[in-house]
Amino acid sequence: MTATRRTWWRTGLGVVFTVLMLFPVYWMINVSFTRDQDMRKSPPYWFPVHGTLDGYRAVLEQQGPYLATSLVVGLGTVALTLVIAAPAAYSLAKLRPRGGGVLSFVLLIAQMIP
Image (cartoon, rainbow, N blue to C red; front, side, top):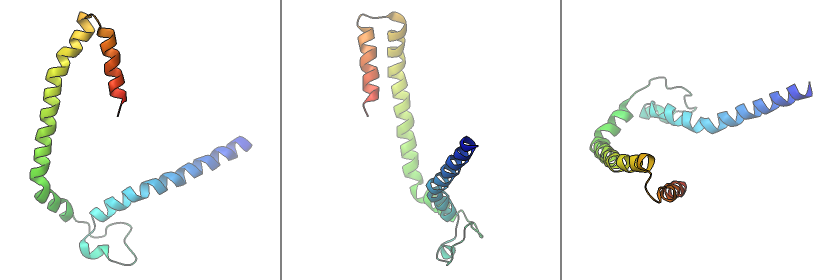
């Protein structure tokens, strides 16, 4: 009985903390769908009554070229990394060069450093 009561208490506390941590995320999503004039209502709406996507439309119109540039740079970086890393990984895995173990260890350590 005591173990069950303790488990329910911990579960309840975990649910409360989870709700507290996720509430700002919910509120950001809620406000993103709310019209400008409804944002200043008192008390605020917990759910957008007259939802709109105007905010998303405005952001995509204003930031669209910059997002496209970031996408091109990111995809180019991924492609260049694959072109360089794939042959190097094949060399370390299949050909077993001299000092390959040390090099693999150094690469592993380099990945651990932020």
